[in-house]
Image (cartoon, rainbow, N blue to C red; front, side, top):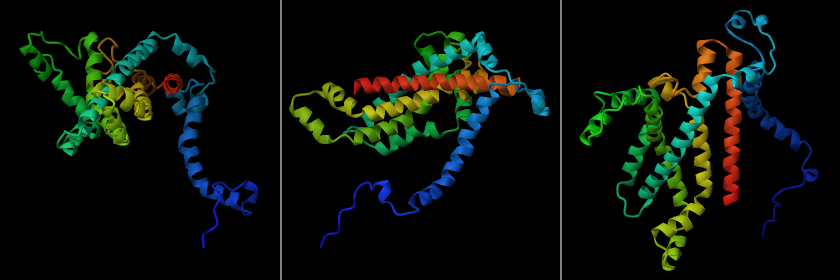
Length: 306
C-alpha cells in the first residue's frame, strides 16, 4: 500500500485554521531581532544624517537641529570626499580583480589531480585570512621599510633603488593593495575550490575526447559553470574592498598627502575624531549607494553573460 502523494504547496484556503498565526509566532523572534539590530540602526543613521548632531548634541540632545540634505550637499562639495572616493575606487577596481584572479589560479592548482599535499597548502593559504589584520599590518610595515625592509632588500639584488612604499603617494596605495590581496585571496580560493569540485568530471572527459586542450577546457567548461561562484566572490570581494579601513588606518593613517584615505576612514575621522556624527552618517549613506550601484552593475553583467 502506497502513501497518498503530498502536494508540494497547499493552497492557503486549505490550511488548517490557525496555521498562519502559528507561523507568525514562530517567525516573530527572528523578525524582531532583525528589526532591532538591523533596520532600526539603519533608520536611526538615516535620520542622523539629516541633522547636525555633533559633540555638543551628545551633551545636550536638544541642541540637535534638523538640516535636511545640507550634509549631503556639503559632502559633494568637499574635495577630501572626492579624493577618498577616488582612492576607494582605485583600491576596489585594482585590488578586487587581482584578488579574484590570484584566488582562481591558486584554486585551479590545488584542484589539479597531480597536486600533492592539498590540505597543507589550503591551510597555509588560508592562514592570512584568519590572522588579525592589525598584527599583519604591523608586520607588513616592517617588510615595507625603506632601509631595512625585506622587500627593498630583495629588489636591491635586481638593481632596483629602494622604494619608499608607505611614504611616497605613488606607492602607498599599491602597497596596501598588495597586503589586502595577500590577506584575502585564501578565503576566495576555498570558495573557488568548492565551485570547481561541483563541476562534473564527465564534462572535462567529453571535452578532452573532442580534442579540447587545457585552455579551451578552462574557457568552455570551467568558466561558464563557475559563473555563480564568480558572481558571489566578485560581489563579496567588492563590498569588502569598498569598506577599506583597517589597512590604511594602521599603516599610513590615510597619508601620505591623503593618498590612502578611504571613504570609511574619512567617515571615521569625521565621526570619531571631529565628532560630526550627522556628517559622518551622510558619508555612510553615500558609500552605501556607491556599493549598491556597483553590486547592481555586477548582477547586470552576469545576467548578460548568462
